[in-house]
Image 1 (cartoon, rainbow, N blue to C red):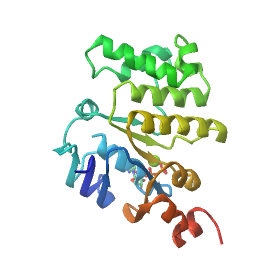
Image 2: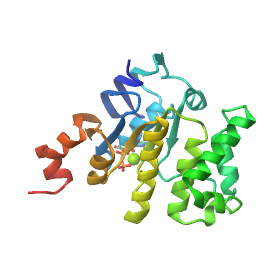
Image 3: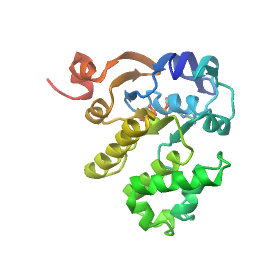
Image 4: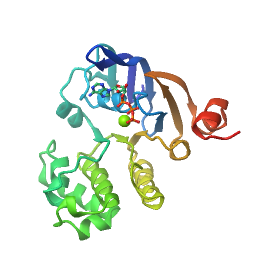
Length: 238
Ligand SMILES: Nc1ncnc2c1ncn2[C@@H]1O[C@H](COP(=O)(O)OP(=O)(O)OP(=O)(O)O)[C@@H](O)[C@H]1O
Ligand SMILES: [Mg+2]
């Protein structure tokens, strides 16, 4: 059984249709990237999964249960955490308070403390800065905080949206390395929206290519990297 499955999902904004019958399937432990140009519908897909964008038809299944139509906080409780586009941390709150907010769905204080320790192990920088106001940190540190906050809900699936946006390549590499650790050591499944094609193909084992709200190709990342359309259009090779 797939961990996550989208079946014929149609969604949009007002009269506009942004997603046309999307079929997508993730196995537990997989690392999947979603590649596509601006406006292709990448964020719409993650927002559908996290319950932020309602669907018009189709179905979304997670661990054998239908989750479409559920409010976003219920989806978090089920084990899906989102690292949203633009990070959306709370700038006037401390690092620690931002992390706490990630675990509001959990009731057990001991579990929260363990998670906090794990996040601080992954990101020692956040531990050093736990009392600092999040808005005064660098872009890279804020992105680390966004990843840490997602981890605080003890997710089975993490949805990330454009982690590399506005960050230096080395910082991006660092954050993706941490996500790979989270995937390999803790078995958390990853669905990563990434516009940098090279990165998208490197960090994932499977890649979906989205154009104008339709999935036009998918497959193992290595194969996708060799395909004509990806090489010409997304990797700008001859
Ligand atoms: N809140 C909104 N209201 C109206 N239209 C929207 C809204 N959000 C997205 N759209 C439209 O839906 C389509 C898909 O947008 P989406 O944000 O999912 O694309 P994306 O692939 O994430 O793009 P980007 O790379 O720029 O983040 C676009 O045509 C966009 O203009
Ligand atoms: Mg987007």
